[in-house]
Length: 229
Image (cartoon, rainbow, N blue to C red; front, side):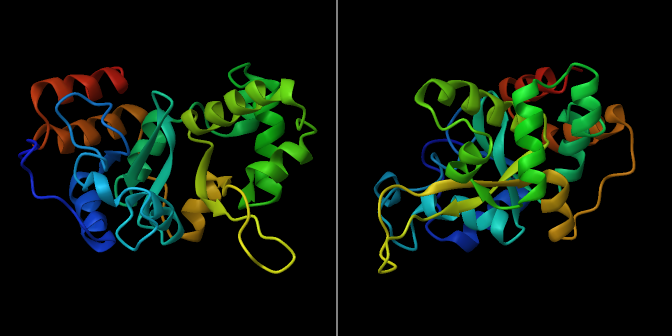
C-alpha cells in the first residue's frame, strides 16, 4: 500500500470508512513512521471547515455508527480502530480482565477507577458532567482528571462515544463541544461487536499478520514494539 504524499486524498466520510475498514488502524495525526493518518489522507483545508467534508466532524461519526472505535488507545494520541479489528486490539492492549480487577491488582489509579464507575453508570457522559460527578471541577483537579481519562482509554476500558454540544435556553450552540465517553464493553455490546475468543498472544499474532502487508519496515517495527513481541 502506497502511503506517499501524492496518495489520493479522501474527501468524504464514506471513503474514510472504507479506508479504515481496509487498513484496520488509523491515527488522527501522523504518529506512526511511514504510516497514514486521517490528517495525511484528507485535504488540510477541509479540517475545521464545519462542512460535511470536515474530518474533525467525522471522527465522532465512526464510533456513533459503530464503524470504528475512537480513543487515545496508545501514545496518548487519538486512534481509530475498525470494528472488525477491534476485538483483537481489545485483547492485545487491555490492562486486565475488567476495571475492578485492574484496580484491585494496583494497575489502575484510584481516580481512574472512580471515573470508570461513573462512566459505567452513565454511558455517553460528557467531560463536564463527569468532572462534576467526580467532584473534580476545581482548576487544580484538571490535570489529574485528564490523566485518569487517558489512563482508562489506554487500558482499553473506555472509548470516546461522541461529543456533546452546549446549548443555551434557546437551543443555540454556545461555547466548545465536550467529549463524551462510554465503557468499551458497552460500546462493543451496542454495536454487536463480540470479544475475540483467543489469548493475548494469539490476538497480537493476528494483528501483526494483518499489518505486515500494508506496513513498511519502520511502521511494522512500531506495531511490533507496541504489542511487545
